[in-house]
Image 1: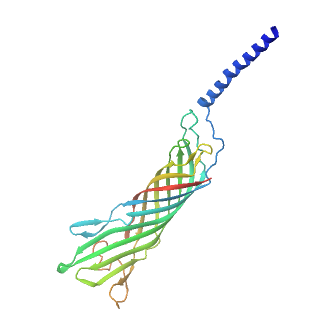
Image 2 (image 1 turned 30 degrees about the vertical axis):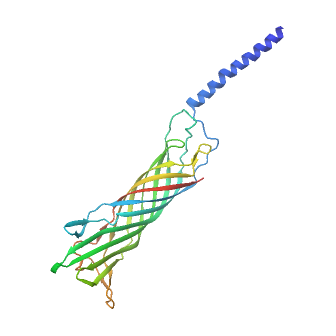
Image 3 (image 1 turned 45 degrees about the horizontal axis):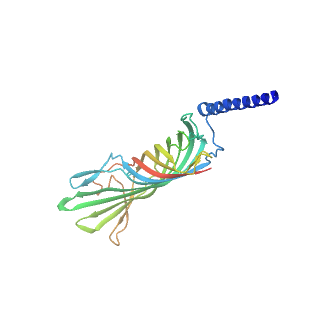
Amino acid sequence: MRSHFRTSAVLIAAFAFLAFVLPGKSLAQETGEIIAPAFELPTLLSVKASAGWGVGRARQLYGMAGKNEVWWSNGEGLKMNLALDLPLIPVDVVDSMGSNSGIVPVVGLELEAATGYHLSTGGTTTDPLAGGASQTTTRTVAFIPVTLGLNARTNFGGGLPSVYVGAGGGVYLVGIYEENVTFSNDDNAGFTRKMHPPLPFGIYGAVGVELPLLYDPEIANSAIELYAEARLTEMSAYIYDYDINYVSAGTPAGRANPQNDPTQLYLKDSQRSASSVAITIGIKFNLY
């Protein structure tokens, strides 16, 4: 009887010890330690595709549209971007879903190589001429950027949004740079200016936010993210001369520059503004 009592007392004490220690240990983990995912798969590289619109910073008078002045930047218009991000200092994504430890921002650095297609259509002017006639100029400009930059990123926890700021620069290949000129009193007098500017160089600054769409707490990563970015680009193209291709058959093509072209009514200097503030929305694919 005495032996049975001692055995029961030992078992009760053991259960009491486990009941006291294990919850305390679990509570310590929940309140004092970050519970890590089962295993973490860091991002090896990311592919981003986005589209949006740029609002040009108009600094140059291109002409008139009736009685209204037309100030137009050839950085204004459709923006389509494709980028490749390579983590240099990876962002460790904290799995905050199963932890009460709070949100701890983690900052990382990545290299971004990007290209795209930036189309500007606008700046159409209709300027009055002598004798009641008018001259209409329609401008179309497209650049293909080839840029390299760095993004500093912070993550606010597993499954939560992250924000980043970036800066970089590069060259902007000229895809299309044309000005079509027509006259109200003579359809055969129309022509196209085809510009051949030296290779423009530009710089940019960006700020963006990303939202995980397929976050998996087991690997602390998301294969697909939705992101939005605001980007300021400063770039200028310099037009020193251009080809003139006439509409009328048999009229030979010519060569001119802004200073000696009598049909350049307003903008006579060589510099063309291409600054813009663009808002784009896209999808980011993470490979891990």
